[in-house]
Length: 301
Image (cartoon, rainbow, N blue to C red):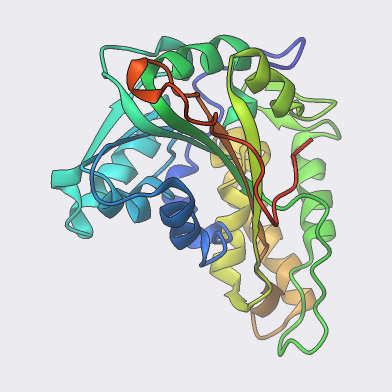
């Protein structure tokens, strides 16, 4: 957890209903990649830590006997329940409102644990050690995020690019120059260095995979607004009584870049790090340890 910042329950206040529409999707090959790399066959249990509205747990649920999502935000859990019911995934999914720091919470053992752009919000060392103890021998922890530093060009796209710089400037006009995070601020952003944290917790690896993005996405004005409100640093709850004024200014800004309200951008690639628990017990004696990079893989930093 970042020095000088403490998590509070307002971090994503009001953001949950904007996720499904606003957030950019993970690369479409992500689920098949995880099915292949992890040998998923409809058995075992998945733990999604910081599950949000079920963004990754729901598409992965058919590959497990049960998927359990945990998140401290009540809106995220409510949205995950709604989406699971709408997609007929209720029987395979379970949603629990709690902080990662409250695990194991009697949830049992799991085959796979996934952190999809959520690990940086947690007290990472204790959480990693706890999750390691919740995974069965040979289990895996999967860290998923957009590929950092990727240049996504807009050449040849049919509509103007989303004016992210102008949107960020408008957010700063309303919320101040330092990035907001719940009731606090993050002047230096969220922490990195996941590899060292997970290695200290006893995980082996990682195996790194990149799922290519790049497909053209069409985004309308409402979708871009939803994207802004889905972010921690511009969640609806941060604007208080000025939310309506901010949204009106946001829409005016967007229209100056695209009078039709249509935008284009390329979908990001998805970066995946797979960490293994190792195999213990007499039934595994003589087997090579999992989590070593194979052909075509490179070690993550």
